[in-house]
Image (cartoon, rainbow, N blue to C red; front, side, top):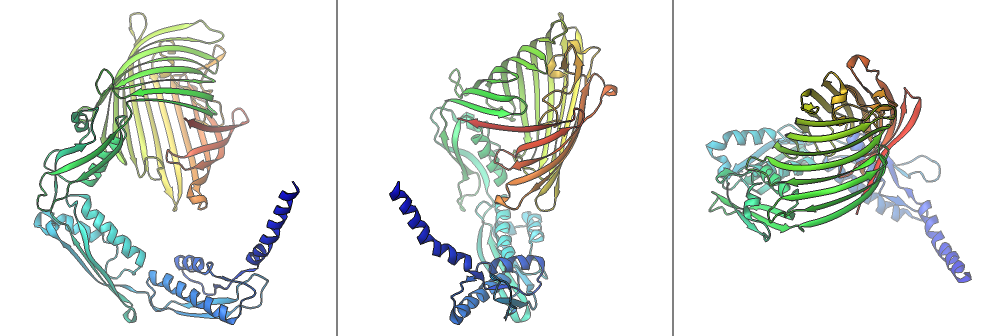
Amino acid sequence: MHRRLSAALLAIHLAWPLAASAQDTQPIVTPGTQLPAPLAGLVGAALTRFTIGPEADEADEERELRRVERAVLEVLATEGYFEPMLRFEPASAAASGAARYRLIVELGRRTSVGSLDLQLRGALSEPRFRDRMEVLRAEWPLPVGAPFRSPLWETAKTQLLASVQARDFAGARLVDSEAKVMADAASAALTVQIDSGPAYTVGELAITGLEKYDSKLVQRYNPFRVGEPYDRAKLIEFQQALEETPYFSSVLASLQLDPAHPENAPLRLQLRESRTKRFSAGVGIASNTGAHLELAYRQSLTFGRPYSLQTGARIDQNGGFGYVDLLLPPKPNGARDSIGALVEDSDIEDLRVKRWSVGAARAQLRGSRVLRHVETKWGVNFEHEERKTPLEPLIKLDTLSTTYTWIRRDVDEIVNPRRGNVIELEGTVGASGVDLDEVFVRGYGRIAQYVPIGQRDVLILRGELGAVDVDTADIVPTRFLFRTGGSTTVRGYDYESLGVKRGGATVGGRALALASAEYVHWLERWGGNWGIAGFVDVGDAADSFKDLDPAVGIGFGVRWRTVAGPLAVDVAYGEREKQFRLHFSVAIAF
């Protein structure tokens, strides 16, 4: 013990002079001229890199000032100021730690683009691509007369080449580029030369890495027809579609580039197959459902065919469920069929529900997988349900139903959107009763609108509306009725606690209306991945629209941006019940 204490004291003694020295250093230069906002930040950041200690002499100061001058000149040059005048003035006497000099900047004339020679050669210069060439020229971000900025110059060349390569010209390359700056005339002459090469069309697939699966399985995901013009976005979506399947753990797609044979160029796929069987488990806790345990099993080969079998179970404080699904490979038009079964036992707000169901569905996605697309799903389902409230008799239902769902996503980013909207519409027709002769019709709609505010923030507007056309809710399964409240609907209230009060429980109603507004401010610090939010939620579920009594929830929260989407922790005040509630969700997979 004595030796460890002596060593600790010795380490503190040795580190003390270093810490004191670091604390005594001071910035050597501070800005002394009011510069435009973008320049002020860049110059200020450059100056903070240079400090000097109290023991420095005049030679040290002069050497450091020369370094400051070079750094500031480099910063100003990137923004188009190639002949600024800099001088250092001694700072007036100030408190300890203040800078010794003030930097005075006379910017001079800003260099602008005086001439532009944009040379697009190769097949792109052929008459059939005239419209494409005009678009590329029009989108060039540094036209004659624009201020010349080095970062924008580099970005413009990269973007131009990427735009040429995006369609037809997979082998395009930047042959030459030059920015000739004439500082005395404050003018820059820009020259860019791009050789597009030949226009490529896509041929047959050239696949390596297949062992357990047939090439016909891969062909089902192929969006290209032989002879179709090359499209990089479509190639990326093809690769992503294969990566998202349970069949492959690694996918690399590329076009075989041979300028002498651009027609029907082979599309090369390097694949690595996944394990055919996989088991996973996870635990978590959420304000809606409490602690939970999940188990899942998946196998990608069933009955010797590429049918994906998925089964699993979950238990939480509201009950539990188990399921099994069999997903078939997609059809040539992208449609994917599935069949499945479910068993569930839940007790939420004193409504006990036991049910089992079997069904079949067909899902299809049209458009870009990444940004804008429309997803549709049509399903047929038969289910048996038994539900019970503390004060009313048991209700038993056998129901045959068909549901069509239409979802359109038009956002700038799927996981963390700031602009665009998501619209969902769903319609159901069902028949219940001993002879399936009691019919109900259900409609539901949801919209989420994302409005960018400033450089980072976003305003999220959300609305839901639903109705069931039926004489009595007693013939409608619980999942087709409406309850609301909780972390994803009306915050400030318990999960599904807003609904029809009946038989000592909260049961589902035939009408739903909900609206929400949330403002998220993303912080600059910590990589821009943390944010704070304020929100207002208003909504209710009842037996009819005239019986709706909107409950209001207002609060604030913290957001953490992840690859799976923002994680949220919210504190909300429920105006109806005069209570604060915490809403959150945390899950760990292993």
